[in-house]
Image 1 (cartoon, rainbow, N blue to C red):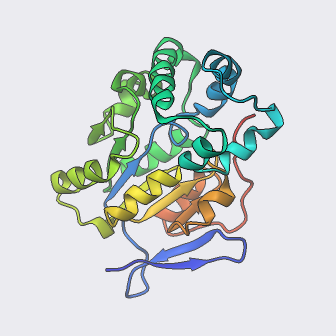
Image 2: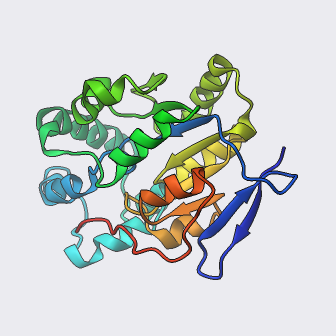
Length: 245
């Protein structure tokens, strides 16, 4: 059951169909957290200047921050000459900051409707994130957390493939009947490695153009498009939900 993609001239995926032409019925949706469910990109922008000063990173003009969204992690490290050992320090510092400031981060506008709608259908929901479980619970709240069948937190930046496969095994759902939804190219690549279709969201840490280069199975400019695709009524023209900043 290989899903076929039908691309609109704008680059948006108009529909996802099964081999017989019917709508693809996903039984499992695996969400990334930061930049996908949680609107954490504006928070990141708010602390970026202090972060750069603390770790002596090259100066980045605020107008150039959008350029960072068009680059993959390894490209950012190369362009700004950031050694890997410093990445680990920065990552640990970011985790501490987010733990202390998690109340500043909210659910992405429109994602509540996505969670509500999918949880009412015969679809299992999962979260796979490098963030801490307590942060996920703080942002989503107990009612939303109860709707997720699987929760995997503290996952390494490039270790999602094995976690995806772990969830597939637990859920007893084949990869073609699962959909991974995230905002970063590394999420897309992990999904591809696990043979899971990928839906890219454009309101997170990665620019639409960068995601589009990798031809995701779906490209979402607004959370409501997730609902429309899952219900088989995709909208081709939508006002994108822009990343803040």
